[in-house]
Image 1 (cartoon, rainbow, N blue to C red):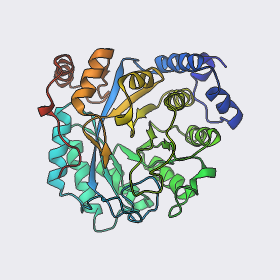
Image 2: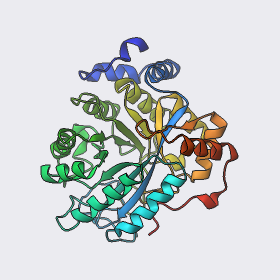
Image 3: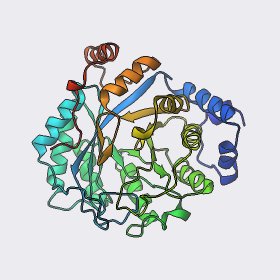
Length: 352
């Protein structure tokens, strides 16, 4: 299958086709992914987001990978919903170090009626700064989805995590169909979708292919597809899971790029464990989005100054927001990349 034929957007992928992509020689797969990537994106631009945990721990869900689950004793300090002003202060810092999107995550099964007004204020405040807004709050009903859209939320993150077949081995407190329903509500409300999954939970190649098929065969592809490597946390059922082969992870990114050619593919959780060479391969395979800063919710993420240094060495620059052409701000970011600013500019994304 040639790269040119896969540069078109499809929603009818089947398991045999996707497994054939995974099973190509590594260099052939990366060449195909890079060719598709260049047909739709500047290959030397990466979208930069910052993620802040606005409510940490005590989640009633039983996701086996998650240190925020109340079902497991991981030693995670529980925190109530952050004050709106503190969230806006963190957003301002994120913008100052070059993020174009500010993502807010809450460890909830679903947002409560009493918390929604504060959540909506956060969206409006971050939006007013000229940042793209993203939230992950768990399952949404139609009314909550509409309220978020009216407040100006750009993206809603709701991961499928894995294939429908393997899903029940990882989570029992929420069904796969409920996740798909939330994504449908988000799309119907006019917001963009951020949805992906996790490698390293004991899934098979069929499961990895099955996850990507679910995403690629949605009526519209998610605008953002985070691919996570399991971060093993002591106290969770997956703390001793088998390591993911780095080449298998790169293959996942490459196949995601081919199946969803116009989506941003995000190199997400697990990046702390990746050396610079692996991250460079990930960008070559079609990853063009990262989380930026010291923490990714409750697990470590490479420090922002290291990210800037790697970008400079690879000749990569942060992607500007198309609808927010602030040329002076963008020039300042790029100059900071060249100068490789010191770590004093950066902050811990989950510090209150």
